[in-house]
Amino acid sequence: MADSKKTPARPALKAVRGTRDLLPDQTPLWNHVESTARALFARYGFGEIRTPIFESTDLFARGVGEETDIVSKEMFTWEDRARAASEKAQQLTLRPENTAGVVRAYIEHKLGETGQLQKLYYIGPQFRRERPQRGRYRQFWQIGAEVIGPQSSGSESPLRDAEILEMLASLLTELGIRDWRLELNSVGSTEDRIRYNQALREALAPIKHLLCEDNQRRAETNPLRVLDSKDEADQDLINALPKIADYLSDDSRAHFTQLLAALDACNVPYNLNPRLVRGLDYYTRTTFEFTATTGQASGLGTQNALLGGGRYDGLSEMLGGPRAPGIGFAIGEDRLILTLQAQQEADATTSGTTLAAPKLDAYIAPLTPTQNPAALALAQELRTAGLTVEVGDGTFKLRKSFDIADTLARHIILFGEDEVATNILTLKTFATGEQVKVAHANLIAALKA
Image 1 (cartoon, one colour):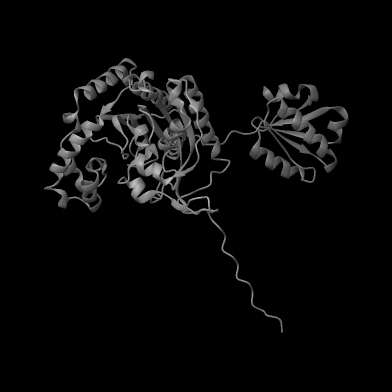
Image 2: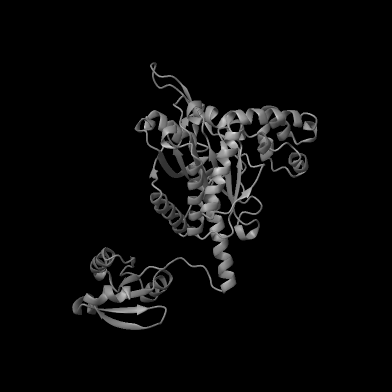
């Protein structure tokens, strides 16, 4: 007797937790954001750089900082075993951020030897093994830029900082982000930070046991990171800690003062935030964040940061390169998109309209399979003229063709034997219900009207 046992059905595969698919009804907004950014960056003299999505683990350990949450908890790292006796095994990591990779490329390709300021931007995925939540994914997208070069190129000037911040203000405004807020601080030079870190250690010592577990660890390994804590129970204690502004050198204070003067000249509003230190060890002097309106209107809840960045004057030397002061930023594109979507939904609710994707210019409906080749040729002609077109199939019933066309397009073009014979097409506009006969030669003009 044959075995009657059935092979158990295999479970359907799904995207890995913390990742997601972006479907065709979602990607137009992403493409709009990216094309707007590319066009704006070009106006400011930036060129695109593309670096690998994985690098040597040591790049991030040295550049980002071994005691940061990113390196100690969140990186996707693996051992790349040697494939031949002449090779060595190496530790590789999916990039959790892109500044270190860009600076590595700057060093490797000797871009500093040109003597020119390098203005570089990137758009691409980053990877962090953190708890997924709204607007935060394990594979997430960033739009970022770096300005870096030898000191003689002006890379250390506060004017570079102001230009970056003015450019970002312009980008958010062009994208239609409302009520953004620039949070700004100076964390001083490396020497300033050493003095301030010592002051923080001394201030934290008698209260460390009152802090949460993470902040107790940070108080020992990286006191500056305590200031970046979001733990609600620790906020009063953190607010009472020494302020970094009291430990800035004259040079750092002058640099910050000149930055503020340039922002004032460009009418870029800002809010001074003495607790803004950012989460990466390479930052010096200027640090900043742009935030969206807190709450439902931003789409982000209380975690409302859209982008952040800062100056990293010593990062090139940390990675074995020449002195190359720089400043950069990274936009969380997922979070920016959520904010734009929330604004669009709020606007639609206020106006009483509904959100809808733009429709195609035309849907061509061949009435029998015989007309399929000619319908495809007509679509080719219309698309060449810059129109957006979908082609049906002659096996479809007319009612089905109309239903599909009404969903996808502004017009339907009926394409049967008579239309092929006379070169006069039947064109219906769904918005008005009007149906007319149009000569083939006039069809493009009619669709563009």
